[in-house]
Length: 602
Image (tube, rainbow, N blue to C red):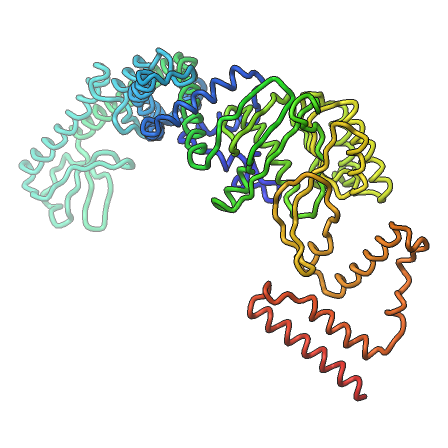
């Protein structure tokens, strides 16, 4: 939902697929909504109604999102003010954010005037005008990042501070007067009165003019080309100016602390406005996603039903690109037979990579998005409120606790069986594959019966145990579905479409070929599969997989070598090879044939 399992990246997650927020507050709230979907139909409906309003007014929605870009994280800024850590620059960002509130309020009011009122599309009556006015009155236009050097209080905000500043600035004028007067008294035209942080105030005289230096000058520093002096008058001036600067800084810092305290006192009001702004951001973003990707408003009900027409996986669709994802229909009803003949338990069979897991996760994401208050990726969706979504997907171990992959699988399954209710949605993927065939089949069979008979919740179970498909004749609420494939000259094409009925094969060897297994491995697997299937039909009751077949045990070794080259040639599919790969395959086959012929001559 929030990051990928393989590399922990945000891209490729549900949050990445539906996040069009413009503020940090909105991004946090969207994550919260997805992580804690609602179960109250009324509250969910209010979110859907707000999205409908924003979809109907794309111009106002776009302007709303543009104005939200001007808003900083008000909630966190308020928290920093309460902690006493907010900097002048951060309070300036807060001032900028509060300045955007009247415009945002006017936009939402305009939506109401057009007859498209939604309870969630409002900021409330408190726009914090007093807090904004105080920040505008006290803070300078461009506040510094810290308080240690001052410069954050606007001139005119405080009489005492202005007086200290006047004294400091007046000292600068006095400094210029001292420089003019000393030049006239000494006759040194290039005499300069300067200041630095190390030596304070001083008079600098070039060494060529040292003969004109008066006796009351006190040497302070010797430079390469000049001497620096101080006079009693200059020392007195320095004391006055530095005193004024220190007093001004102290006063300025006290005024800033008082301002921050006033902001802190308005913390609850700021958080309330921040929550309202975040809500507008999330709703506008979800409306943008719905419009851009063809999401629809789901129908919510209290029945234990899940009907999806041409549903799509929102993340896979985004990764593939528009128009490439194959939509699927899906129907589940906890009380099968009550209406429409829907099943409450779908047993999904078919090849790996066919799309079983994608369809199952699509069902879960449609439910999560619908109950989080979002539109959903489908042509139509009817969602009965789900109390929990349980998944048993993938393989992982926990060696630190001494748990194997199969033990982790069983623990997760046990948690589902003990916690699921008739209102839950359960998704199981390949239960029982981590142990012996008959053990795994027996467990999968018993788990299926328990969920169907004892829990009675909406369930999808993807499996390669084709023996389980016989349960459709015994369990009234269970239906078989499969992911369709098309076979063509020994190869398969995945159609990624769910169809009624059970799959006849798992096509594991074909998938192995697509993955690049060696041709000799695939040939041997085909022969073993034929013998296993013959044994299952009772035609070879005494099966010894470790015995070499008769046709492999004897015969001319050179003829067998020729046959191996021909078999590899038959296994090639030229239409699937690039020119470079085709050339390399032909070269290897030619070399092997030459070696065989050379061996025959010997």
